[in-house]
Image 1: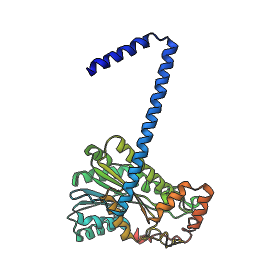
Image 2 (image 1 turned 60 degrees about the vertical axis):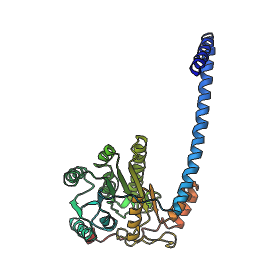
Image 3 (image 1 turned 180 degrees about the vertical axis):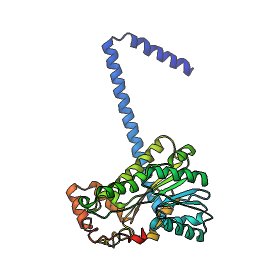
Image 4 (image 1 turned 45 degrees about the vertical axis):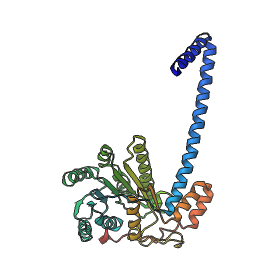
Length: 341
């Protein structure tokens, strides 16, 4: 019966549509297109509001109730810049989680020491490789070796980073290029295709609060970290749009961490923006990975400050930066001693 009524209605519509002249048909088509666009706009806006409220409530709930941690036993975790600092501490945090650790660093002795410490912490499978992450050809070569020795990397932590600590006009071109190559370009190569093919994996970008706001004396470093964040966000959207929701992404933006990389620097208001303890940062990063947290800003005050940055006018943002010491943070910069690099 329903099919008969639908056929009858369709026949009537077609009958009267044929009797319309060209102008009337065009008018009717335009009217229908306009009405459809209005309805689509209304429905999509309604969906946006509904889901936004839901996700905000979900985020508030997660603020008080921790998300369930995923099991990473058997995963292959590759950490760049593992020879010291946050990279080493991340390796030690993952050591007891039943993963295969793959450690990359240009500092072979430091990397071997990290491997030794990881084994002491309970890691059964640790593989250390000498690799200059600024050299694309070397990255691909060592990545092929990792695939042969260990298998496909399923958790990639892009942690390797350098800082020149010089004002833009004082930094030679070679150091600027090196900063971009290590801090940004090294994130582009080698490991994503197998994750996409398996619809399984996790990309972690260790960026910086300097990738969210400019700092005097860190022009090249800020540029590299802004780029790393933009790259990670874009890849995350590409993965979602192609239905590869099994590949997770986490973007980490800590304030400056006491690893020696920024030795000599001082924070103006340590109660609000403290120089961060590296052990604390490493634990928070691993927790963010295990709970599939998309963004991790440290300390928590950064969430509020970045919100202010996005709504304040330009002059007020400059005032805010001066107030929090963005113009003086690097004044006493010394950086990591050569023997630790």
